Length: 289
Image (cartoon, rainbow, N blue to C red; front, side, top):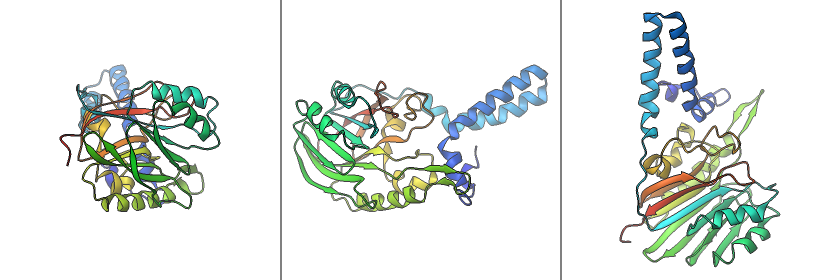
């Protein structure tokens, strides 16, 4: 657990695989505890104490409820699943959240359904390829961010009552687990580097990144991007906020990352007909630039 950052990433991107599911190493600690109780051994008790302390050092702080009242901008991001059987129902669930901004990833043939279902609550929206942004505030300077061979990211200026804020919506390349190539993250990592470069060049001091990164903030391979931003869940959530798969969440790969704004609270929304859970955050924009 403590040495995960020095694990070799080759062959097969082993480090990314371990880091993606790192919190689940706590299950091994629980098994050791059961073993110690069964054996009634002082040596076994000491043996389980060491990894238990290590796990708490890594993840204990995430169990603290850091949610607070307040915030003047609520945002939601959701990978809606291209094959979602109930897109209109999913859209209504997201609109009912009361968010001012809704980012959607993995749009496809159902895009017109989302546009119709969200139109009354969100008068402004843009869709670029498979990602889209719906807003209660005017959008400007919207463009595709070139992170993949087809559009998987966009950038927009949202003109909030407290001034402009840059919003990026992204869906990094999917990761595949193969017996021959291991944990396939090359395309995802390349997209993360391109997205990080775009955000580094962003002139607005306040910026949000909403989307499915197909990885967790524990994954060192994504640190080129995630280290530049704050996770709303880590700063103002409770627990791990796991988002995928929706039926039994194992990892938080859907993120709200911020720069120049203060997260007040973060949470997951109820399941829709997607294989991801929607995630939400309330943000304090401050007094503006």
